[in-house]
Length: 270
Image 1 (cartoon, rainbow, N blue to C red):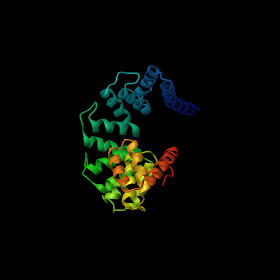
Image 2: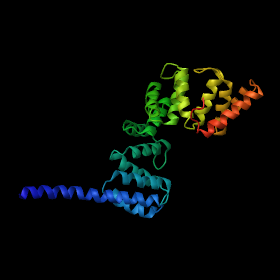
Image 3: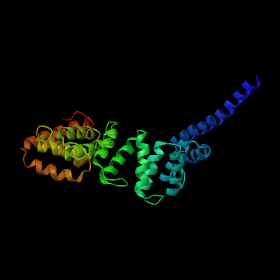
Image 4: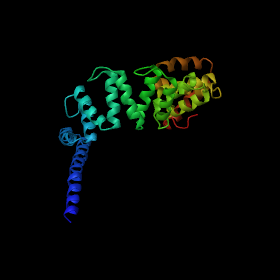
């Protein structure tokens, strides 16, 4: 009987602190949501001191953004490191960004790539995208287009718009994968529907050239004008060139389609 009580007491003594710190974590999140960062910092610091990774991550985020505390990249790196060491994917990604950009720590592309890999392997789409970028450009790792395609694909399949655009570029240029204009158009279309200006521009160019899709200057003008409106600098010039080969009535038709496309949040516009 004494042994049974001993086991019960041991179980309670182990579980009770974790419940208490989880409560501090949740209370801190509620405080942050209502803008009371001072309370959030106090509660998260208590939980973080007991090794709660999410609290450590949150403190790193506050230090990085300067919310509730003075902006301090060094402190952000400290907290992200603690959370990353506990396996928190978000912290691993954010810490990788700090190493990549040299904020709060000496710039180290190899360390960034390693951290992105850890987060990417846990399914973090941002890390998968950035790791793809590292492989595509040979930053911190040997340049490897096939690996870039692999990681872009993982992120793109999760709906990460920039990865969808970059994957479209890889298919378009035949880098790391066989050149396939139809696949490029498919990925550009997915990213364009999410508002990615680069993809909208690339999609417009594909319609203008008739690569991977039937040539359609009305659709080309529409997507290029949308891309230009959304800040893609090269789209405006391309749109004006396309317009030179269009009748005024077709330009008007493209603009009418564009307004419908915008109202539909870029969905089902082709």
